[in-house]
Image (cartoon, rainbow over the protein chains, first blue to last red):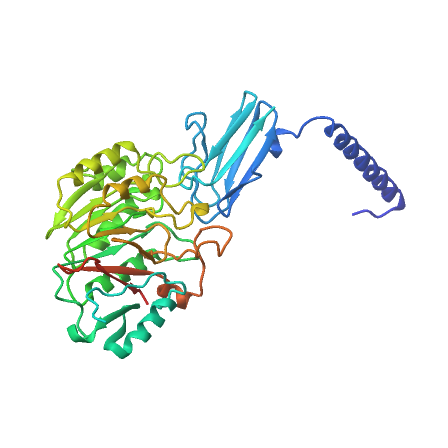
Length: 119
Length: 322
């Protein structure tokens, strides 16, 4: 609990510093592509979103099924990556080591298509 | 007008068994001695001159069987949290049919996730059906994860390739086709060249008068390609049976009844016993459609089929579960 004005002052300074530092971090972040933690694809309503996701080589992409029907994530060539059937709330991850464009689809509902662009 | 064949519902737009055009046509004939009857939810017309009691089932048929589809055993989301109950209700409905069906066809998506216990449960429930023989074809849910190996082990004895086969009953030739394997990105259902080559040989020696029934999971006609409701190479299969006087195509997959007649070919899709899906284009996606619980069973159902020798079209009747 902050009781004295001195403590308020200290708190205020820390708060300002925290904001400035986080602002700085964000600024430097925009000079680089998004970090690996943000590489997620949501599956819902028989679609992958985003339909096209761009990541840097070495990123791990995580798909999560929010639909009420199971889906799979299978690369177009059916060998590069292939998940098991994901029921609702289950996830699948794959690390993209090499640059390239990876088209994929749901092997159960093949009209569902999307791609990962690795730079 | 003296009509020998029964008029069948073309498109059941509102799922109320009434095709407007058919209804109006039917009413126009009433003056010439035609009786229009809604039987099992389907509009049928009988010439009064060859009327039997409409209270009877068309029981003079020589072959009578039933179809169920899309039991999705293992599904437990809001659209239907108890697919066991609704499958049991479907079996009760089969057992309450006016005649005992000789066998059942299950047009796939037996299971929801191709898990052993899901297949086991369906097998167990179907043991209570009056018809002891069940002929299956797989849905895409039945071949998830193992390229259909489990499906083949359980239901594929004597079948070829991914599980296609044929059999004869009272002079009617039945062909079970598999169109859920090796699906390509962006594609529809697929039969594949190996299966088509087999089909060509399979029907080659049959007389043109032999009634043919093709059954497969995904519709063998273009219902709604945007949702994957069609089969890429079905035209090739249909060309192979074009010469036959009577062809009936029975499918599932879309979880609603739909019918189309094209010359001597009658296409029909069955309702699911698990959950309904929206009509083509009426929702963002073809997923399970939630309805008020008291309406659910009205959108689930079974189909029974009667073959009367001498009549070209098999009489197909849909029954709701509730």
